[in-house]
Image 1 (spheres, rainbow, N blue to C red):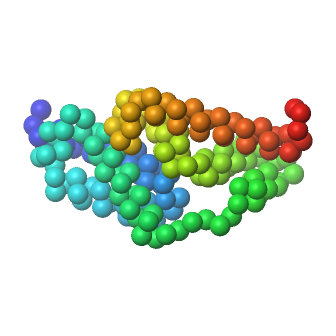
Image 2 (tube, helix red, strand yellow; image 1 turned 60 degrees about the vertical axis):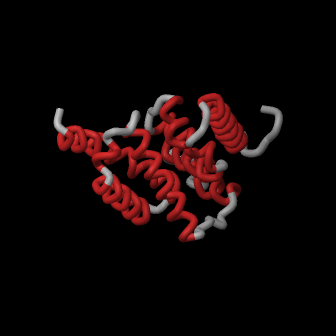
Image 3 (cartoon, rainbow, N blue to C red; image 1 turned 90 degrees about the vertical axis):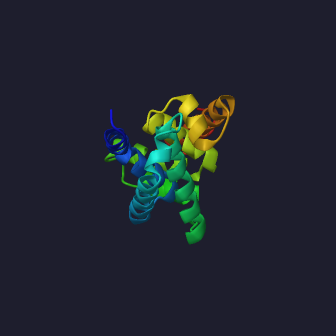
Length: 171
């Protein structure tokens, strides 16, 4: 397969993944689109060297991850809404639309996780990456990826249980 064909195939298969990855970091569609486009520009300029990487897919995802973190730092945006407020907003509809509320609640909880946990759960449970690939993308050993993924899932599960029990202990 020619270099051009390999490049096109790689870029085409990663399009949605890169956008979702940057969106999970930035929580802003416009910024995410900009970062994704910037990554594609960098990938285009370095197309020959990227294809020589042992795992070009993970390499490009790592580029997108780092670019999104850089953009986040530039913007210095921190949401001031507390988790309790997010939970109240997500569950305040009188019981209608519960499945969308659980999804929104889950996204809100995930957004409050530490970065490594948030990225691990997103890459594994949303994008479907293997543990080894996540380790390459995040620059972590596999055991650390597993640990962060486990902690993230436990935190999400505990917060959802709290909300579902309406803060009542002992259930």
